[in-house]
Amino acid sequence: MAEASQKIPVTVLTGYLGAGKTTLLNRILSENHGKKYAVIVNEFGEIGIDNDLIIGADEEVFEMNNGCICCTVRGDLVRIMDGLMKRKGKFDAIIVETTGLADPAPVAQTFFVDEDVQKNARLDAVVTVADAKWLSDRLKDAPEAKNQIAFADVIVLNKTDLVSKPELAEVEARIRGINPYAKLHRTERCQVGLTDVLERGAFDLDRILEIEPDFLEAGDDHDHDHDHHHNHDHDHNHDHGHGLKHYHDEDMQSLSLRSEKPLDPTKFMPWLQNLVATEGQKILRSKGILAFTGDDDRYVFQGVHMMLEGDHQRKWKDGEKRESRVVFIGRELPEQAIRDGFEQCITT
Image (cartoon, rainbow, N blue to C red; front, side, top):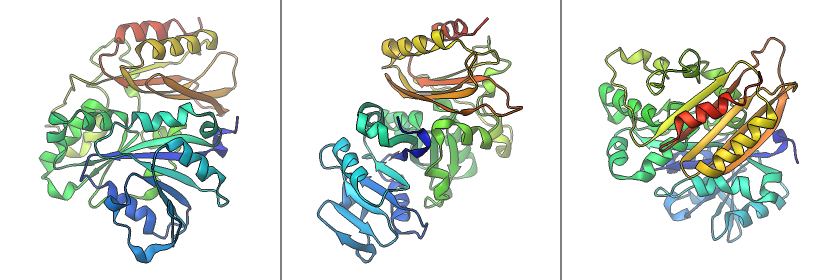
């Protein structure tokens, strides 16, 4: 197993048609960011790459003058990944764009399934570009749009200049009703720092926790308070005044668990594996940082439906609070059973 740090980070970029994914991809392919990104897209036609920026192209792969390369998903993503891994100039990161109508799950799952891919690459983050003006409509009529929000580690809420402040507050509340945990950036024309969306290290959750210390506050005092959808993220709303409606998305739930006492790995790992094996269709994303009894290393895991990957990440630092935090996002989650199962994994 390659160390997680040596694996190439992969960003899955998703978002509904017209939300601004193409704008973001064009920035990656043309800006002078000094990184080598490999960008895997569905259709070049959709992106309209500026020919002046292309320096060399064999039929499947374009090289851009800023050092990025670009190829299409013709057929099998695994095959393309293998081809990229064999190229001499290794990449800083790989970006895979999904079609606007697609559910990101199968693309994300590729990075858990194929052994060769797993050796060399790791899913870094799912980034969803959402259109501030049309998202609310899309959530009503397009289940894919909801999946893309639920799935995200990072949400780029784009075209915020086209909506009023109250409309923006409302669309954010809707997003939070589906996914309280993603890092949210408000943008116009996808003007977001590329480091905010690429190479996030979202797998280790650290950057998220650094930036949003309240990331999982819901677990603290509310262990037995099942109204957990509403106590997540007052921090996001501080600049909108207090008149904000909280949406609770009937169709999508999020659940956070935490324990300050260490977990028993001989209980926790089998419980988690069994949970995703039996309920995986309902669980879109799972992730956590774990403190195990008698283990000086933090263990981190993330999952997509039934697939999990996890690794010892690093030593717990001196003075760092050794606590375990786990998040599930999905539909019709068997919430009480999950809470009870987690409790039973705590070392007494």
